[in-house]
Length: 280
Length: 171
Image (cartoon, rainbow over all chains, first blue to last red; front, side, top):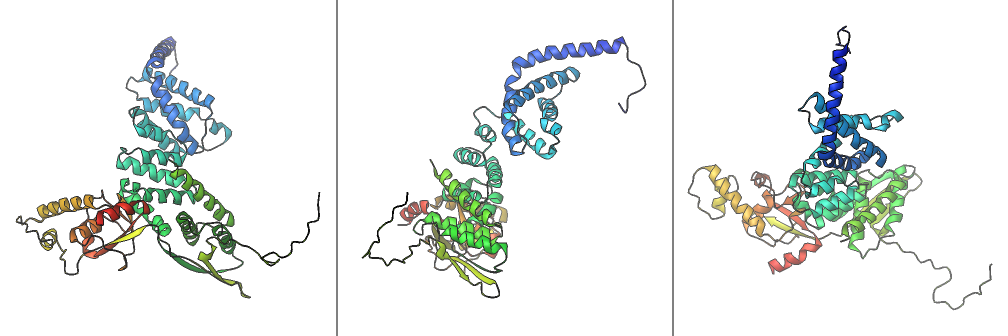
């Protein structure tokens, strides 16, 4: 509009628009036969990633997005025959999120990251394990699938593990790290990711000794008291209990556990995750 | 409905005994708070998950250059070019690393004399030293020969599930 001249529009323009719409309708019919699988795959893989970015879409919205992608792509092809499917999908996605109307800000970086991730997944072979991994919303499930997919390349495996660990709750993350070392799976990671988690594992699996002086009125003192109560529930004869105790103590000394509720949450997250990762 | 319960006499435990399970709370020590409110906290756990295995290069082992290392290993290398020597050495390191019955990745822990040295050959020590970062050893990692200039020993923590294969290989 800013660059538009002051010319008037006549029957020629109406014809051009009509031709364009006619072409787009024809293209849509073709796309509905040939492109539905890609569009459906795109939406299917996108939903969990959007949910991770706190942008949840209902199944009805997912269907609307699917139709919008095909319609936008048909219109785009009518205007420019070399339009890429990904560009049309992103255009449709940006216009199909209801959150904006609710006043919820759309994090563009997360949206773009999800879109790129999904485009990669859509281009993968149907039997590629990465497709299933990317389509899984639960971080621990993604991690478990990646561990089982032994043919996953080192770079992909490292990325999935790093992302999943970052999304696990405090305590759960430590239990998952223990699992990666106990099974030797850490050897499949690249050196950067392995080194990072190696530091945490060392705190958990080796002899631990730390001391601190705090004032009884400090909130850390209450957290410490809660921690002590939680450790009292653990069985001294069980080696896993020692791992859990060390993990909690390390988190306390690193000031990750700030409140008694944090300590309680980390305690349960460790137990829960440890049980899940060890389940065959 | 509350029914009065008769007193139980002649019990083996005195009536005011308190049975308390303290689990792993004993790992925590606390002094205070006294009148000042200052509290000293201490956490101490001497348990280790798995067994630490130590690798060490002999004190007299020359490790200044690939040629130097090959000579220290007792291998005469005719080709004077250092690049070719490095390539040959890396092949030897990778081969030795695959022979070690360790998991594909292990945590690097503080090296102590008390840790058992199961493989005293210098090439095993080189395979351990050059394939580790500050925190992990990775069998698949490309060897970093420069590690040998600042480190002569390393201990790797082998998880419990791998100890059996470790014992079988070294017995």
